[in-house]
Amino acid sequence: MVIRVCCFLLLLLCFPTLSANNIEQLNSTFSKQVNSQLSQSSIPGGAYVMVQHGAIAGLETFGYIDKAKSDKVNEHTVFRLASVSKTFAATLTTMLAQEQQLTLSDPITKYVPDFTLAEVGAAQKIQLKHILSHSSGLMPNAYDNLLHENWSMNKIINRFDRVTPICQPEKCYGYQNIAYGMLQPVIEASQDKSYAALLKERVFTPLDMTDASVGLKAYRAQVNTAKPHVLRKRVRTQTKDKQGRYIRKNVWRTVKVTADFYKVAPAAGINASITDLAKWLIANLGYAPQVLSPTLLTELTTPRIRTQKDLRKRYWREYLTDAHYGYGWRIYQFKGRPIVYHSGWVAGFRAEIGYSPDLDVGFAILINAESNIINKISSQFWSQAYDLFAQPLPDLAKSTH
Image 1 (tube, rainbow, N blue to C red):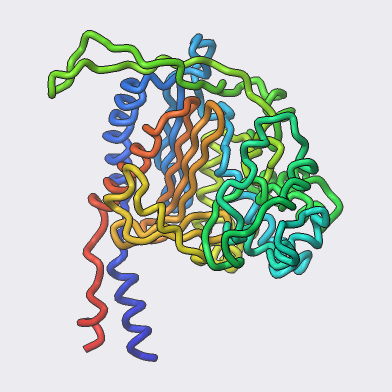
Image 2: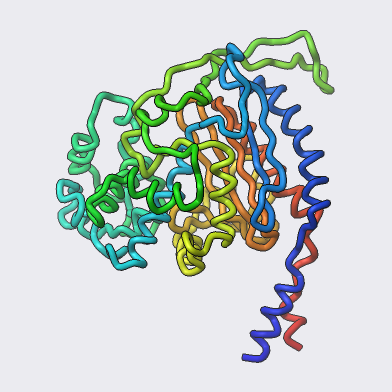
């Protein structure tokens, strides 16, 4: 027991720390780097935030809300969060479970009785905790394609009677949106309130996330919103790179926001500003225990299922040594230390968010274009943060002697 305590204290002493000057230095150089990369990819607009020790350490905005340059992006410009929405749905579901309003071992069929699978009894084996961790045994992204059609959620759910699981629950990872959307009736059954109302009451209002909302109607009601952009084409410029190749430039097209993934609000239905995400990061780092308790945060970020494919993720693969999914969050081992992370992608928008318990630092970035540059920027941030501030990991084998 004494050895374990000593090892734990040694780990704490070896964890990296950041001073205010250090994070300001990082923000100063990083903002120029991001501005250059967004410009090179012709991204219409974006914003990022760094948080440290319970406060905003750096917040930068870039470009415009649309290709026409109608208005500049500012700290309250609302973007779609896409799958970053899952972090909120999982938090609310787990919060209600800890209050004994529901049980994570409940079968999803208790709340969605029309959900059946081709294998008799298979649907009843899928519990809420399996939905939260993408370990339901369903094939990845089951029936996501139907969200783009004029199909209601009820009609899509009734289609699952043709699906045979690819494994037993908890035995394999399969990322889901439709299944995650089934958390809405679960949450609403707990207190007879709408998902949007409960999220506002339990999360948005207590954390003062004044720009955050749920759904298409709420997005359209906002005045200061980023508009989505999809790639129209890539054109060759007259400028050459260091290898003598002509550099190609992205040409983006502004498109309308559609209802498709808003149908699965827990999976992809939240709208928010970069300021909202700053407050969300601060809370998840433990600075709002009256809203997100330490036991809640621990349960959300406990690794549940290994996500081997993430180790091959572009821009991240050179840094990742392990990857899991918890409840609504990914847990990466980045250069040997944990980062709690999620990304989002929906027509015309990209979002990424993550925090390091070791560094007591969080980072989020939003852009209004479908570009993988966001993956590169996020991985660069974490690499630079750890390179600047991390001390060597302790050798626990030696420390026990």
